[in-house]
Length: 389
Ligand code: TGC
Ligand code: FAD
Image (cartoon, rainbow, N blue to C red):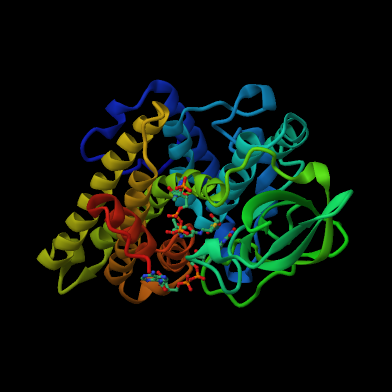
């Protein structure tokens, strides 16, 4: 049994099935036993703890919602969300690894790939015999991916890719990159395998955030891709954006785990830290902070659960996913900052998880669509007026 009891002020668990609770608790224990004891060390060294990956695969964390015939766990979206929540209680970088492998690599292969692509890649990716990455962002096109410069040209026996992607999670260690490039001015998806001539993926260094995660550039210089490596079933820019919905949904859940650990750490610390002759939890100002954190976590839980239930019925809209990603990441970041305050100077130490989580959330707020982009996506939805330009 995990020592971590979660945060459940409104008997949230009564809305979950036994199976969902079992899956969540299993991952919770995995995080206690395998991630928490090592993560600060990996974070400080700026290394991804790759030894976790085989066990994560064994536990069904990759492509978790996809069909069993590909070796996947075929969970519902709520169970998958709870997996993300628990993983991110460990570290956003580890959750990122799972998000990319599942939502940004396996999902597009499953949704847009040929039968041969699915049969070849999905079981290997589920078992983590192969690792994937997703290249959409470019040095000059982040929030506006439709402007991408990377181009594919059709030759008699191959496609030739030229261009560059930037900020790509798992890029350097990936066996296969899902790359989005324009072919005859329309966005298409390609599978680029490690070792292909003209393809390189140098790691980006110097991050103060997501340090236990690999981030890379992808460079394509007259890179020849076999004809069978194009996705046959895409429909322009809409296709990579559909992948983002899956990852944004996982993030909305994931950051609840990060917020929970910040709250739990701050609550326990405030009960034991004595100043002016009593625990700091006994000061009204501290209580206001704790209550604020608890309120925001509780709101996040119910909104995200309902989003998951809608998604399980195939009734969720991408704007609803944006609203949850936008809100939950901003609140988790704010909760991290408040928790840090409650710990005073101790809040900046590696001995506590808060500073690492808070620094990670700076990236999470930016990737998968910045806070501002999600404001504009929901803003357009409610007003009918696009304000991107
Ligand atoms: P726009 O004209 O609005 O849209 C083009 C077409 O796509 C449709 N659409 C979507 N469909 C499904 N899901 C979504 N989320 C969609 N958003 C838009 C839209 O209806 C339209 O369809 P159609 O049929 O009319 O053609 O496109 P735009 O060029 O104006 O761009 C706006 C947009 C939406 C791209 C922008 O707001 C946006 O989302 N920018 C954010 C870019 C982003 O999120 N990049 C993430 C990169 S991957 C990443 O960060 C991974 S982090 C990995 C980790 O976890 O470590
Ligand atoms: P910009 O688009 O340059 O934006 C800069 C600022 O301007 C932001 O605050 C933005 O909100 C604001 N802004 C832009 N346009 C508007 C507007 N119209 N109105 C108001 N404000 C605006 N990408 C991938 O493809 N694959 C990955 O695996 C991946 N992993 C990542 C991992 C990390 C650690 C990070 C940090 C990023 C990752 N990304 C990945 C890239 C990420 O998706 C982009 O950083 C993000 O989409 C924002 O793009 P940008 O950084 O170029 O910012």
